[in-house]
Length: 109
Image 1 (cartoon, rainbow, N blue to C red):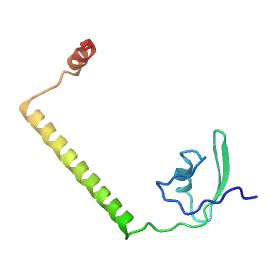
Image 2 (image 1 turned 180 degrees about the vertical axis):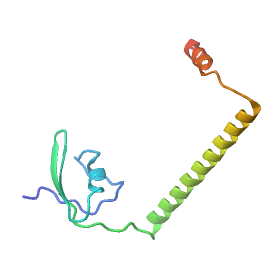
Image 3 (image 1 turned 30 degrees about the horizontal axis):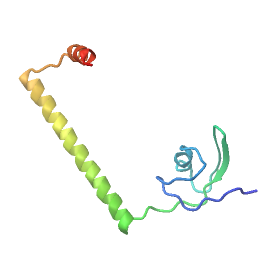
Image 4 (image 1 turned 180 degrees about the horizontal axis):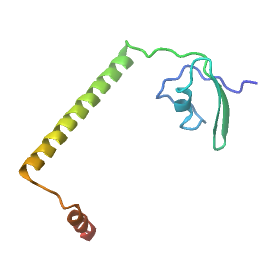
């Protein structure tokens, strides 16, 4: 029989007493799929009843949008900085002797 029915769960959700990979596996399934998921000390027959669209309104959705925008801005800024420093060091003829740096790090207490 059915041992447990789990209600709607977000991709980043948590289900107690299950392996960390369970939700990642479930999110690869199509609606109506049935799959056996096994891990050490764990076996489950999972049926995905329905897939709900992500919330696009409300405080949680706004917080997620804000976090994603901040991550994108940070990634773009980091990429621009890396491109600038790479171009600057190439143009100036600067090179780094990684072996020398490793030797100095190894000699530090």
